[in-house]
Every structure is written in C-alpha cells, then in structure tokens.
Length: 98
Image (tube, rainbow, N blue to C red):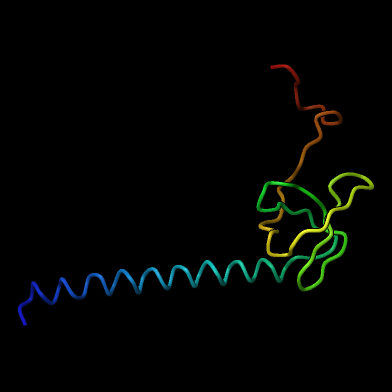
C-alpha cells in the first residue's frame, strides 16, 4: 500500500474519532450539569426563560418565573444556571433611556 493511500484512509478515521470524543465530552458535561440542579437555583431554559427551581424530580422541574407564577418544564430543557440578574427598578447603577 502506498503512503498516499494510507493517508487518504487514515485522515477520515481520525476525524470520525475526534467527532465521537468531542460529542462524548459535551454529553458528559450536560449530564453533570443536570445532576447539579437543585431547588432554589436560578436557571435558564433552552428557550431563554429565566426562573427559580421550586421542585424537581427525575423528569419534571417546576420553575417560578414571577412571584406566584409557576410553570412545569421537562428537566432536559433546563440548560444552565442563570447569571446574576439585575432589576432595573431597584438597581441604582442602571440608567434608563440611554
């Protein structure tokens, strides 16, 4: 077998192996993030809704999105912990209108 043929055969195999390992890393990180979810934690859903976890079980999470307003979400739709949220009405460092 010529070296050029060997390279043409090996490069696609290496690319496929790289794709599988990167997908496995992403999946592992997602599972760790899902296991770390807890009641009281601020989260963001896949559609961008921010809320606080009220109850959570293996498949469903109940989020409070406003005082007294609770919605049910599939647990897999909770993507990440929310960052710090500032309230424009109470935060003196924010300026409205410009």
